Amino acid sequence: MIKIIKIFIPFLLFALISCVNNDELKDPIPPVGYFNYTLLEWSAGLGFIDLINRAPEIPPSIEVISDIPFKETSSRPLKLDIFRKKDHSGFVPTLIFIHGGSWKYGEKEDYLFYLIEFAKKGYVTATLSYRLSSEAKFPAAVEDVTCGVQWIKQNGGDYGIDTNKVVVIGGSAGAHLAMMIGYTNAYETCGSIGKVQGIVNIYGPVDLTTDFALSNSALTEFIGIDYAQNPTLFQDASPLSYISGDDPPTITFHGTIDKIVPISQADTLDQRLKRLGVSHEYHRLKGWPHTMDLAVPVNEYMQFYMAKFFEKVVPFNNE
Image 1 (tube, rainbow, N blue to C red):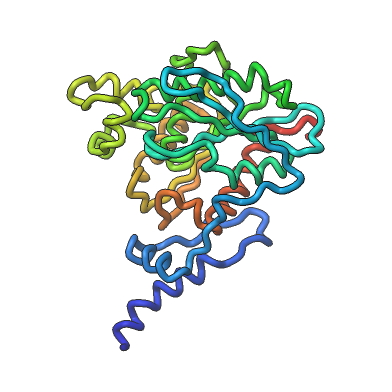
Image 2 (spheres, rainbow, N blue to C red):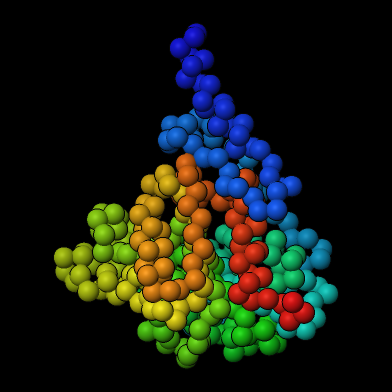
């Protein structure tokens, strides 16, 4: 019994600390994570981690314009959704969310939680679809999301969007696509989009030529061939290959026990952006895994700093 208690004391301690409410802090500190995956799995299994509602109801104050077609492809039409306040007026910044899913699954509704929360703050938020790896290989997905941003910039005025104030946000594979939008114009098949004003990188891969990436079957499916067959193609698909000193400000959130996209990817990005003088805010969350923003304390922390980032890079006209 004593041995069991000793095992569970650190687990319970970390679970309790993780639930500490930092709402009263002006700048929240990172929520305490876990020593390892075993503690994390125990905590999740025993219900000690509060999770966000991934399918919240649309509040009465928010208007949703769904399934707007922005590109025809040989496999299906690609569509986007727009969220805004019903009493929306004037032209405001837009936040474009790109879903993850290893480039092979997921849908535009996956970030409904963020879409609603930031629309409630007065932004126009948008989410778009793209061809998955089972439908088309690289660079199809990059071209698709770039076309979606181009469509929003071209037509956004009809929806109250200030098309000079655009931020792209993605998680995992979606973050990879967001960074490709922000760091290169090499895949603008639908017309030029110019620079976006900010990038939010949520545990996204940046260098697809590393050992971690090359052992990932999802990446091989995304590219369509093995690395040995054409190493250049994997380099071309890496956001790191395109970074230059005039790139948009970036904010990164990444957990140190991420098994899907190792923390070394975010460390490499941070070093490169700093070396080139690109504004970069890096939140290296100790003891948190991939999809860490499903946990309420991490999500609240991230939303706080995302909101501060948006206020800085795409301020409202009255600010």
